[in-house]
Image (cartoon, rainbow, N blue to C red; front, side, top):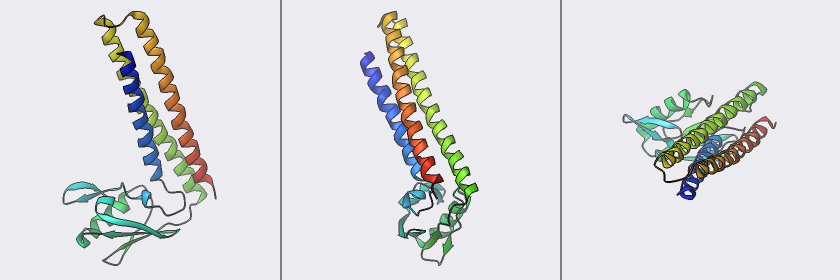
Length: 185
């Protein structure tokens, strides 16, 4: 019973780490990457839709993204979403494709992006702490229902803390690597 709870905790915390990893892939580092915009939500017929479900995204040059919508009437919606995003990029459209030039990052923008990475990592920490809290409540319930002993509860809580610490460290490592990548000139 406790082993199942620990396995579930590991799975959920692993998903939180993957979510952080995907989220940070979307932060620009000075090179054009389709991951930068593919998860951007575009208001399409009243429904927020990920950009990668509406268009083909490619990086033909190191400093240029090309977005080719499958429905040409959605170009305006895509441009609005790009302008509203926190990417700081200005789209150029010719009515068929959207070109998104990626300018060199200034030192100030690098620091801003580095802070954003820190905030995203902290959000990941919060997710992992929430998972730990939920699982501790589950352990408490098991103890109250006399399904486990008090000693089992304390061992389970300690094991949960170890799992929590492991995943927080993984998130910190991912964040440090991304910050280092951003600060490279």
